[in-house]
Image (tube, rainbow, N blue to C red; front, side, top):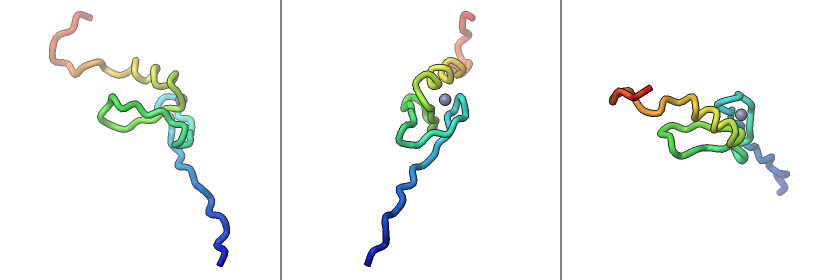
Length: 63
Ligand SMILES: [Zn+2]
């Protein structure tokens, strides 16, 4: 029997920075964070990274 070809659905993710939809196969997912985020490219990842607080407030930083 022929079932025909099964469409390969690629999971769509959303870029954390620009909120653009990106196929999971092209998403950039940094492993340095303890939760999963995806980006359409390294540029958005860098932007997002800058927005992240470096450390939880513990030691009074010299801001
Ligand atoms: Zn993006």
